[in-house]
Length: 114
Image 1 (cartoon, rainbow, N blue to C red):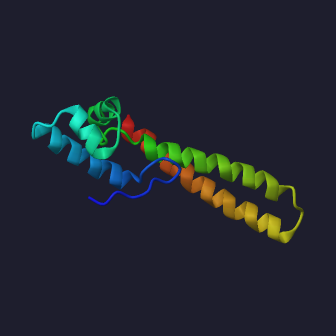
Image 2 (image 1 turned 45 degrees about the horizontal axis):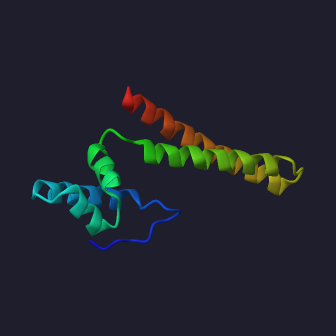
Image 3 (image 1 turned 180 degrees about the vertical axis):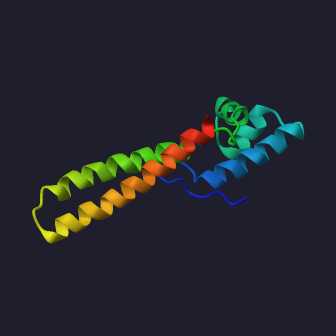
């Protein structure tokens, strides 16, 4: 597996899932938490946490990302709404469309969890 440089301290979701699967295989193969931690440059506790999570039931990385994106768009919308120009109104309309798409995806994720 080729390790990618993390963005903002967090590896991409697919890479994390792949790494977790490899860690599970290592653990099943008899490696200790310390050996796995040394292999990936992590603490033993972090390896334990990773192995204890089930990515199938955790949509939180995507959900958290959407919420963060939503917050940024709301701030950007407020700035564009102050401008009384055609460009300002066009930007507000485009941002509203993005916010609607995010809200729809978040609602679907919430429904999926229920």
